[in-house]
Length: 142
Ligand code: DQA
Image (cartoon, rainbow, N blue to C red; front, side, top):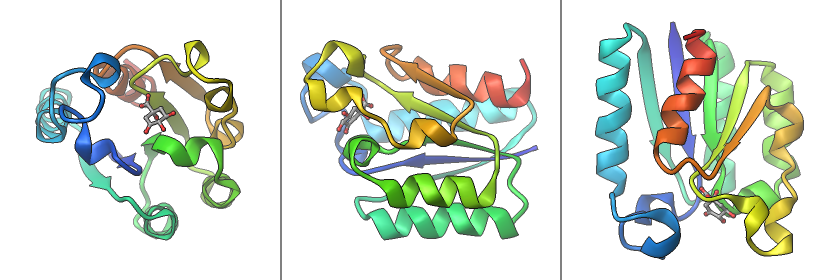
């Protein structure tokens, strides 16, 4: 099984940005966590972060041609604005799980809207970095 994990703007800054919301573990810790989990559970994983909407759209389109089986996406702030990401996920039609480290429903009203959720089989919020493992479990059927 081949899984793509995508992180959007400012997720490379976890551990530094608003630790009271996103915790004190950094982005490299998240990458190591996911890689270790993929080895333990025998699936292939590609992990990609970008601060640019178009780069993320390119990666989603590429996933179609690389025959990726599942996508985990935390689009960061693009969650609340990007119809382009929604359209890309709909275009490739690959099972996708949306993750948010924080509980976006308990924050500002503008964070309650997610465009990408319309193309996702499930949304996980407020579970910290463990939310990524939860999302992977859904995709690998664990
Ligand atoms: C986030 C929540 C978004 O509202 C925010 O813009 C982020 C991170 C989360 O993981 O909790 O950058 O997606």
